[in-house]
Image (cartoon, rainbow, N blue to C red; front, side):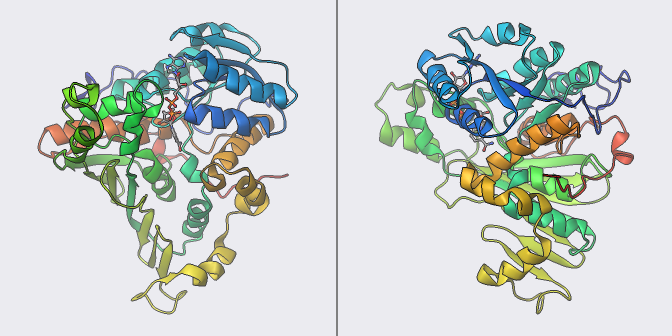
Length: 437
Ligand SMILES: NC(=O)c1ccc[n+]([C@@H]2O[C@H](COP(=O)([O-])OP(=O)(O)OC[C@H]3O[C@@H](n4cnc5c(N)ncnc54)[C@H](O)[C@@H]3O)[C@@H](O)[C@H]2O)c1
């Protein structure tokens, strides 16, 4: 079955290149950064990076002068020289990548720019840190893998949720075997984002809404899936094998457009084709199952599910609760709320123990954004491998194009490419890292 125009089972890219599993690059004394995209997300990254020791912001690239200047002002206020601005040209990032005083780029642009920007950066010797999702098609996912391997650059999709306090604690709990052998997970991005449609000219809604009008599947899988994939050692002892996906009817965005925008408006001219809620089921090669849901429009409280279930017990998020044989009173009822304090005390991740207070103070989705950026800088300065690599970026992002394919074919299963080219069998699971600070 083809997705994005290439055979999944025998990609043209199967020529053996040097793997980047566990990639370690020379320690950087200073981490010199170029930013691509400083809208809602990228501007937050600029502010947080400025608070991390050893970071220098050298350049900023964006379509809008005022947004680039707002972020440049933050750099100067932090006591650093004014960064060079590349403004107005959608390909200005290429000029920025030509510089030889930038070590890494942080990409927070609309989705269709992620892969081209990261590939250009890596080809010019820069490590690429990409917002989610890293790739829109299977071809793009392979292009990231191929380029990272050819250039031996880091290519990390910045899945910030993997740095949430709850997710880190659950990872530690799973690593200690508290849930037994893992069998099943549930992940989601369920977030009513209809209000973004009011960003008509620029901002997230201006480009994201177009995706709901042109594609049908799970359009944003990685926030829920990233942590579950790490609990399950995906690409490090196991890998995604195949997936089936179904979407419901598309209803509420068209209703929202009719209620909020005049006749003839661009949101009323087109048709919303993406089902309001998508449900995908993945099975791994080693026999684990994962449900991944997506719904960015129905009226419902936010959730990422964050459920992980094994032979001894289960953790379920939103709100967090647990039942474990031999550890909690029984497995017929959940331990939750204030009673979880003991569980957190027992399983808190060492990274959160050390940096959690600062991360919570710095904020960004409750501190996960800061902790992720801090950890990236730590790894670059100490010559340590990233916690998420290009194979994770490719496999987690692949859910979207594969779900589109499955939805279009009555939920028929589609195979995941093995982006590791067999190395998942020998790659070691991500350990419980305890940074020295
Ligand atoms: N991890 C998270 O929690 C999280 C949260 C929000 C957004 N995101 C991701 O961040 C990314 C950006 O989202 P956003 O909400 O900030 O969108 P946004 O529209 O607010 O910002 C995008 C920015 O990219 C700039 N841009 C567009 N094309 C460009 C080009 N060719 N060259 C240079 N700049 C360009 C725009 O001018 C804009 O400033 C998306 O990939 C989104 O999925 C992640």
